[in-house]
Amino acid sequence: MRRSALTSSAKAVAIDPKNLMRMFGPRGNPRLTNLSVVLRELNRREAVHFKVEPEDLAG
Image (cartoon, rainbow, N blue to C red; front, top):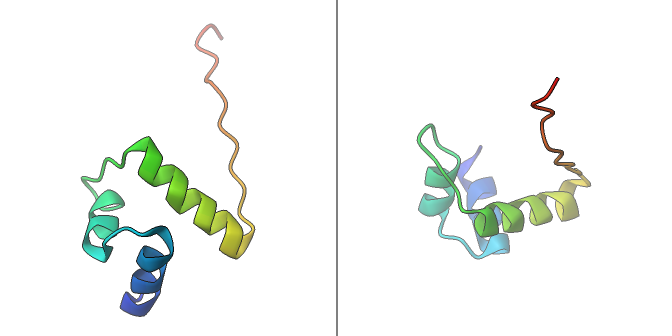
């Protein structure tokens, strides 16, 4: 991701750009609240939709 895109994305979700990079880095482990904010902004900007379903462990 380009620095300017990262900075504007970070501003849109009110998360420091360095923290945003850490969240999605190789060792990242974002909180659900932060992840929800980022996904909501992604949906708003790009019309990307996510659906979460439980895994069928019995099968």
